[in-house]
Amino acid sequence: MTSHSKIHEKRWFILGIMSLSLIIVMLNNVTLNVALPELSKDLGADNTELQWIVDSYALIFGGTLLVMGALGDRFGRKKALQAGLILVGIASLNAGLYSNSTREIIFARATMGFGAALVMPATLSIVIVVFPPEERGKAIGIWTMMAGIGAPIGLLVGGWAVENYNWQMVFLINIPFIILALISGYILVPDSKDIQNRPLDPYGAILSILALGLILYAIIEAPIIGWTSLKFFIVVILGIILTYSFIRWERRIDFPMLPINFFNSTGFSLGLVSISLASFVMFSFMFTQMLHFQLIRDHSAFEAAVRFLFLPLGLMPAAASSDALSKKYGSNNIVSFGLFLISVAMGIFTTVETDTEYYRLAFIFFLLGFGIGLTLAPSTTIVMDSIPEDKAGVGSATNDASREIGGALGIAIGGSILNEVYQRNMKIPEELSDSLGNLPMESFPSAIRIGSDLLNEGNILGLELIQNAKLAFMEGMIMSAKVMGLIALISAILVKLYMPTSIINDGVDS
Image (cartoon, rainbow, N blue to C red; front, side, top):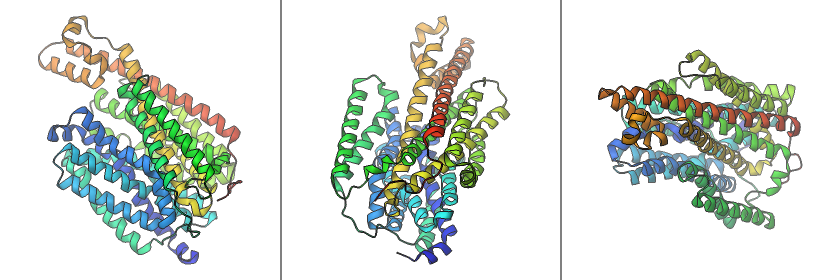
């Protein structure tokens, strides 16, 4: 391993490279979403294929995080980072230049998910290794800031690429940044790994991939197949059985991939819960707001994404200053206050109507971002301080998996609440009920499209259909915000009561 003195001289440059690599991963998580309509028209993709284009990345990424983090610990975190960036780059180039079918796009997205699963844990574990303990919190705050702004910026980049070029540009825009990260990383980033060279845990690796993959699959599919469907029930039960098997196996063997006694640390466990819940709210809110801005307020994808910028503008100063605030007031108080601000932001959002001025929405986005920054950064620091340095890769992967599961749950549950309330409140004009069937009841975008078509044909009832759909959608969006706000408030109380003020390896052994 490179000497600490040499590493520390370059630590801020290394943090910059890790931040760039991290943003590449986070961008790819959401960038393609805004390109789906054009991609669908160009390749003739149906709804199921579009869903798999999005979900293949999330499933592979989330499902393999633990294994990829463990491989980085065992064989070298720099090697994992470089290999992951190369995979993402090759898959992006192939998708942007040569893919002519949805099957090829799905394969490219799955490959990018593998690459991302190598990159993301490596970035945080390298930060942990190269920074001394007294600067680690500040560095993690910056890392968290980059992870948090990646998704909103991804929407902006995706919207810009599609409006000015085509869906292929969503993939090709990765390439110059990946080349920059690869070259600078090769020159400046030191390699590090578990110097004890412990044996791998292949059986645990297989169990973790299957368990995480099934849980994520169930969450992603639930809004489509139904939360009470037999398929959802079977997948969830299988996921739980495999998770239980993984835990039992990890407890039994001498060299587990993920030592289960990490979870004996209150800081580690509550830190993961806080990270998951903050991601739950952020991704759920972003999902509903893209629909809100585009279909209620008639903005383009790029115009909608621009209106998200107040979220990262709030998140960045909060995450950057969270370490100093945690040292002064205690991590539990800062994380609790962050969750409370998230709850307040959602409470204010419940007063929003279809004609509410944007300045109020901008304030809500800023307040939400500030709360998320105060929650994620100290929680990540506590999680990483709870584990030994030689397990930094798998610890980082556990942190990242909690983000991924929280975000997937947020989109699934937030979307399901919105749809349920929308369908309950949606009213089709009596004169149209026989000819339109249930489609406007089942799909808000379909109701808006059908209403617009009727208006273009000179049928004034199209306006009534659009107005009813917008009002029903707003009811669903408000209810979703109420649920998110309540969850954040309960979490704030639990963190205040039970999360340690600060933590340095509290009883967790390697």
